[in-house]
View: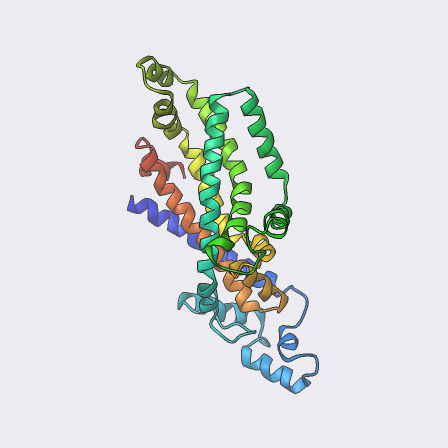
Length: 312
């Protein structure tokens, strides 16, 4: 198992190195001078140059990247140009709120997606199946910001059941979590349905039913466990995506998470903070993918790490 983990960690380091190079070069292509934004348009040329020298932004890009990479290995992502605080502290302060929102959304997505997928597979080609798949197709097509605005208009503005936006309590979490969960559940439900349909046609399912097992025991105890591998894969990807990609939803609901921090950093041309957020999100994807790979063997004991390594 450990050789497999170390191999995946090695791949992850290569991915993170690529992300750091790409984000560093891409950020410096963004138009606008962060020094001018920090000091204002009325700042003198001497003030601008003094701060540029102080922050090292007057040095060649490869020198700046070398300093940036050296700081990463020491756990230093630099300081925010806007606040002056360490980038890592800025991220850590906001990340718990993003985790709260993404976890609530993912819980809704798993429950709704798996339930719809299993029922659609069990009643394949029925009205229930057709309705469920039509709803998932609609859900995939709906922009997240549009759904969020509709929920705000109906349940916050007209009915007054929930606050419009801006809070961080449990009641404030409901609408953004539903927005994330409903959209993420569409992919999960489709994969669950296709996996369950394939498994339900196998001989061991007919044998289980012939032995007199109840339908719930057959569906959840036998069929779903054997159809879980693709579902776990997409859930893992969805978890990473929600943790790093709640930008639009956080903006719609004014949720103080990592997404709103990223938008603020981009607007102020805060290069160190933007690079730190991108690298942090990449790190999340790498960790989640490793955990998903390890989870495979717990779901299906036939999957061995040695065979995974040979096929990698």
